Image 1 (cartoon, rainbow, N blue to C red):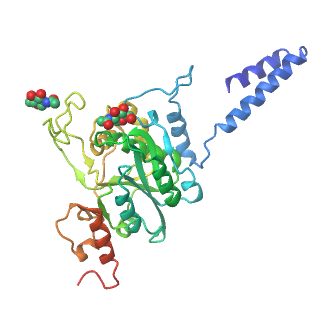
Image 2 (cartoon, rainbow, N blue to C red):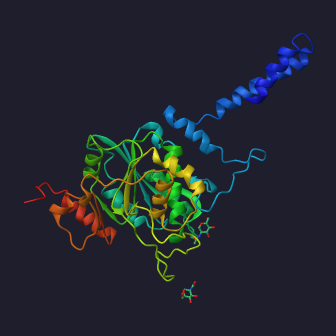
Length: 343
Ligand SMILES: *[C@@H]1O[C@H](CO)[C@@H](O)[C@H](O)[C@H]1NC(C)=O
Ligand SMILES: *[C@@H]1O[C@H](CO)[C@@H](O)[C@H](O)[C@H]1NC(C)=O
């Protein structure tokens, strides 16, 4: 506190005169102390993370205190409407599952709540599932509030929810993890149309060789060319991303990471130009950080697409893309039957 030091200095220089002047500085000192106290984050942070968090919070202009506007995907340009602040204060999750989903897609959320998000203890570890929403033009504010009152699992930020804004959504996920849940050990970004064998995921993460820091894993994509066909859903212009290939990244359907990474992603993203392919964007952030994704212990556990349900196979994988939430409940119910899944 610069003014505190200054007041002490002045007090030492002129200790004998002007008692009024002096008590004025004592008052200032008190104000400084109180301000520092109230600036402390309300959550517990591991000391090694604190320095970095403090850096991240310096995103305001020194004179006006206004937020510095970074590029569009910088998550601190947006504000949380619902943030369920208390979630990681009461427990320290082993794993947080973050599911980006459209505000009106309650069907997908309900299917997930009935299936892989149903148990809060998995293999003896605390697992939390949260849904990340932007805002839609629709009149759903009250409905979402009610849904959150019932389930306490919605995180909403005030950016416009659209397919083209998925990179913003991912970065808001990272921001929430960094600021609201830094004590969790691992996190996963997982799409809402996924089958997730949550037991197998926790078993994988508890294996002795799994890194606790700088760890990102999933279905690895190597040397993927950037799509330049402007009618494609995945089109990215040369202006947004000039190189012909993406760096190695993990496919966006479901990637798992150690929870030290979110704050590093938010910080490095200030200098990584955004583009609309969220998973490749995380790949770029990893590259900028001097890191690379790691292959999972059993790569065949991260499957992208399935054409048919096979009970034995679903009991061994971690992820599968499904074509509808209806199938999720159906497959899950079948998988959880008491008979052994494999012959
Ligand atoms: C993405 O979100 C921003 C911030 O809310 C908004 O200005 C922009 O129009 C959105 N873009 C699309 C394509 O929805
Ligand atoms: C898409 O590309 C075609 C051919 O390269 C061009 O003629 C057209 O104007 C482009 N459309 C848009 C929306 O940029």
